[in-house]
Length: 87
Image 1: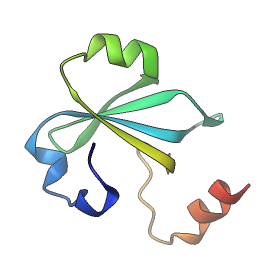
Image 2 (image 1 turned 180 degrees about the vertical axis):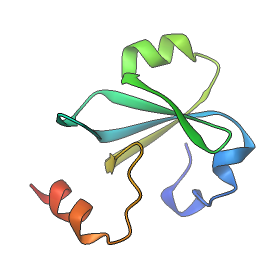
Image 3 (image 1 turned 60 degrees about the horizontal axis):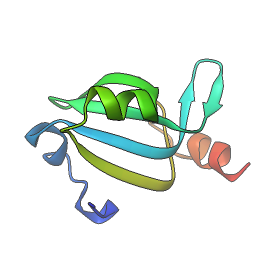
Image 4 (image 1 turned 90 degrees about the vertical axis):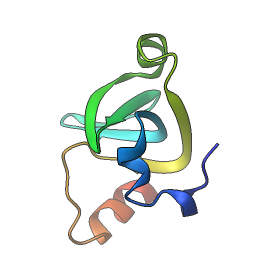
């Protein structure tokens, strides 16, 4: 398991990884039990945890409890995402 303090930018380009946050915020709203595949520093796949774990079974998995990911969203002002997680 990788701690949050070791999630430096270079970690996301070293090898593919499956991020397992508590929430993934999609177009229709936040969902649980979803995962995000990061490959070559980009979000490469998003879907239910069970499906992505089967599809990418050899990929390093990183649990992110109490975290929310918004694929495709660049947060230039963190208060928005902080407010969504507090609800």
